[in-house]
Amino acid sequence: MSQNILIVEDEQSLAQVLGEYLSQSGFSVSILNDGLGVIDWVQNNHVDLIILDLMLPGKNGLDIYRELRVFSNVPVVMATARIDEIDRLIGLELGADDYICKPYSPREVVVRVRNILHRSVDDVKVTAQVLSIDEKTMKVLVKGKEVSLTRAEFGLLLHFYQHKDQVFNREQLMSKIYSDNRVVTDRTIDSHIKNLRKKIQSVDGEVDCIQSIYGVGYKFAL
Ligand code: CA
Image (cartoon, rainbow, N blue to C red; front, side, top):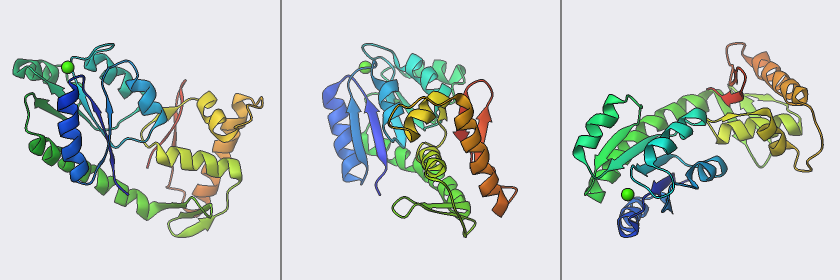
């Protein structure tokens, strides 16, 4: 399965060229040309890495980055046209994964993207040793042992798994597992998660793959 790269860049020809290099290197590429819809897009699509321009119409890259980090740890490469800007950004200790200065060589960017994703792939391997989820058969293995889940529990686990590092509030989780908009209380989600944890921990008490974020909701943590 190819990894998805989101390029946020208002210079369309630049985005195009970089997108082509990344596609040729085996990545799936999406491009957004302004800053306004980025957060919404990331919340609704799977993305493995974002190349984020700093100066954007609508909303600047710095604001986007800060909003993004509230709910996601997706790797971000910040792009700017000013080399002195990079020093300032590093000084802010934002924690972006890399910085690139325009004009950049698309080939160099591909190398950097590969390096960053390679680091993340190692994390995926560790996860895979603990948890394996088969979407078609709804079969879940924890350390190789099958765990039987209800449809709601499975839906939650899969959603967390597919959106690692994102924090979801209870409302978002409810809308994921109940498409009919039925009225359920916050406690419904809490008890589904409690049961899900209990079932996973019945195999290994050390495995705690869903983390509560106090006052916000839950995130996947493996
Ligand atoms: Ca720009």
